[in-house]
Length: 76
Ligand SMILES: [Zn+2]
Image (cartoon, rainbow, N blue to C red; front, top):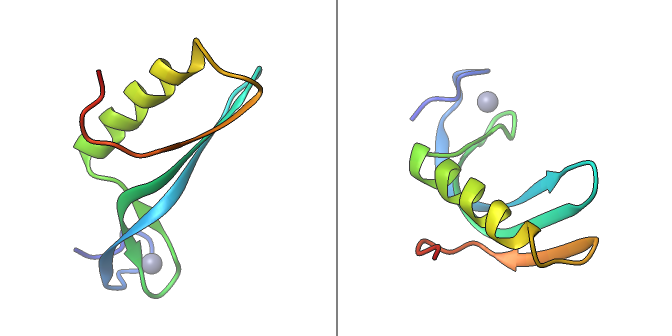
């Protein structure tokens, strides 16, 4: 996979995703992603993006101002 910004080579890795909304900040750790070796650009697959949305929605209802969760594939 090529970086869409600089055309550098992207490799698989994990990153920390931060959802910073008006009333809270949710940090999701160990999220699988593609990372550019040249400029550091991060890209998520469609599946991971969808899962991140579900995780954020699931966590928002029952959380304090700052919550840190681990990425997971199976979101209830
Ligand atoms: Zn790049």
